[in-house]
Length: 153
Picture 1: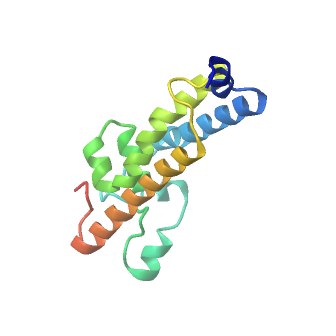
Picture 2: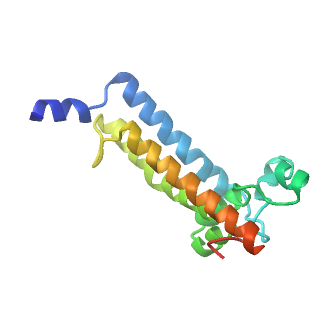
């Protein structure tokens, strides 16, 4: 591949820049929202501060869903309480960490008009998403099996 081909793949134009900026803001918004929420001491239920109902899965089946504790994990992580975030939901903590890194990276790349350090591709984005989903499901299975809070606690 020539330098010009590499250069054209790393540059962001018009629509790509707007999409990167939109995704960056979209990943930072949950962190901003989590900063105004108070983590629920039991490790889940923080989302109810937004006027949302309790987890429907838990109400119907008496067991937490795979994402139970994710809002609490975000709220803990933005306060620097990594251990509490992991106890709440490991997958939610990993996703919150991704938001912390990817949000500013996307905004900086959009502002610069060029991917910084890494050029994302569909397969890699799918692998990252699948890995986060896999961690969340493993944590959920462990929580169900052990009756505890999962891999983080």
